[in-house]
Length: 292
Image 1 (cartoon, rainbow, N blue to C red):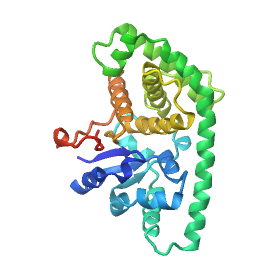
Image 2: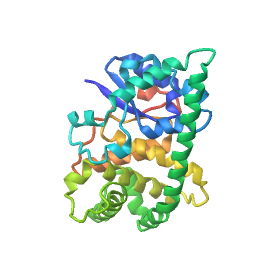
Image 3: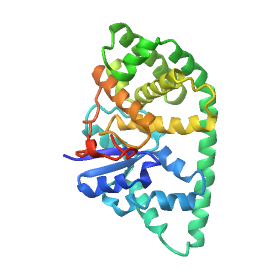
Image 4: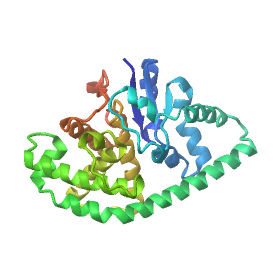
């Protein structure tokens, strides 16, 4: 059985990624569009060369996901549907780019291309920064509506009461609806069945964002810099997409926590989630190594 993990930008350089890919030809990684944007936002040429060094050595095990805005309408209800989320041509092009980045001295045309990609990445990150500043207050207020006991239930998935489950579901319906109206179907008025909503990226992203801000509020991160929060939002996109697959390869504890929580909650609501991948040597894994 094959395994596909989402990889965040930091894990791209971790030796655990190489070990994972080397262990079997049936192990794959998928990169999201924002992970690639994050890779190019600063010193694109050098950062991309270093970030793609490992995955570039395994081109047949590398996938690139479609741009998020191009797959918002895709409903993923089973493993077979996950194929709709891949941009196969982009995967081929990224493998080619990884080979081009090994050319020394660096050709002038490649420098120009990477300079252009860096500028585009900066614009995208600036747009994300503006979006975070716009929607953050509402999510923080929503997270504050949960008691400490309810936050613990949601975070751990242990002894979740019907009241907590209903409260979370009602909030998810509201935030998912707002996302769809803002990014997907501005004029939509018809209600959506829960089973249909859970198959969409919008629902899963809203869930991950809520889990993130619940943690953020619980820890009192009111002084967290906006730029750092934008980086966290990129991680939430990775966590959301990973619910369709077998997990996340990352050493980021917050990302792992949200990923685990989202997968458990979706299963509790009856939504499709890829089978969890657990490293065979998880018990012996060194501290800080990417894990699922």
